[in-house]
Amino acid sequence: MILCMTSANEFRETPQNLILERCIAGVANGDREALAELYNATSPAVYSFALSVLKNTHDAEDVLQNCYLNIASSAGSYRSKGKPMAWILTITRNLCLMKIREYQKTATMPNEDWMQYLESNEKVTPEDRIVLSDCMKRLSDQERQIVVLHVVAGLKHREIAQALAIPLSTVLSKHRRALKKLKLLLGGEH
Image (cartoon, rainbow, N blue to C red; front, side, top):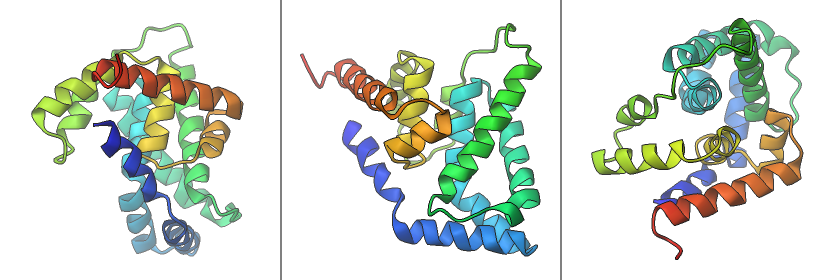
């Protein structure tokens, strides 16, 4: 299970960044196909991140839609720094924070619906869904966000620190702690 998760980080290669950069440039020029391509390439990471922050599938879906509306309207102001996914996830984070503010920061949010998200992924077996769901629930919110951003979005730790607005050392220690917890839960260490 963990081997599969760590190898997913290979998603973020330079050619992928070039594709995303090209798509954002196309969106800035009003190309709807470029927006569709960008959505197809990045929506799983955006949705996963929003879900890990908001803990509610309906709110995560709202943020997903609003993220691409924001991208469509602000793509012209995007300045390439070689990290298009970090830019997209910063938009996602800001939308999540706005959604949390709607709850006035004190309202209790519904429990995270990991099973529904996992059920939509055909690569995950029913047994793995149960195990993954239980493991993810045992991580702290920030640990879960860091793992999702690293595994699903393929971001480097420095990019995660930027997206979550926390120090790199915190990201590194929480990622290490989360992996250690997952290994213990999966029986990888005794």
